Image (cartoon, rainbow, N blue to C red; front, top):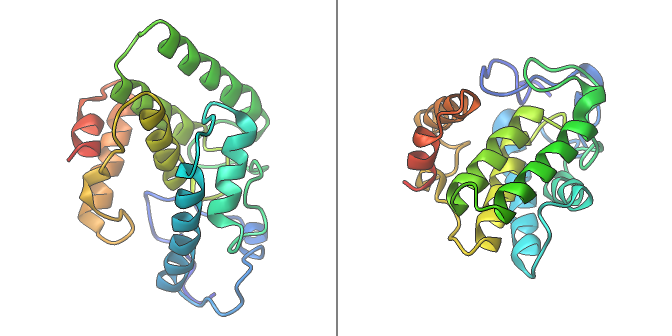
Amino acid sequence: MNDPPIAGDDAATPLTPGEHRDLIPSYITNRDQLNEVEQLGIAEADRWAFSRKRDVLDERFLLDLHKRMFRDVWKWAGTFRKTPRNIGVEAYRIAVDLRQLLDDVRYWITHSTYGPDEIALRFHVRLAWIHPFPNGNGRHARLAADLLVVSLGGERFSWGGGRLIDTDTLRKTYITAVRAGDRHDFAPLLSFARS
């Protein structure tokens, strides 16, 4: 690939050379082509995920969701990363931290610790922070948060009203809001997610 899909993007996580070699479509030569083919898989996964009731707080489901989103693009789709990243937990901690997150969310729901939107956004931030996969973590976390908020009786988030891969300003606003969530300030992300 002439223009690596992630290189130069400070909001995305670079792939290792081995992960790059796991690109399935051989015709992809630039980021726009990669974004386009990934978006097709995400749209299909979205339809599948919302076609019936799903348990978004099930680890197997979260792996299957990622696989459905990226299975036609990356050989490693739906499998936990095995390499270190510039953000997220160490690779050996992914499964444990994910189980802890799922348990925490179940507790928040059972005890009405937060409202549906805040539960879903806290889930989103922690899932993105764990960074379970080599790539696609933000998109996966947004779709999972949408599924969770709907299961709690809310409406899907608008996430700024556009596709985050299409505009730099929209993506930067989202990244800033997620980083505020990392510091336990969820107001910017709630505002962005419902704008």
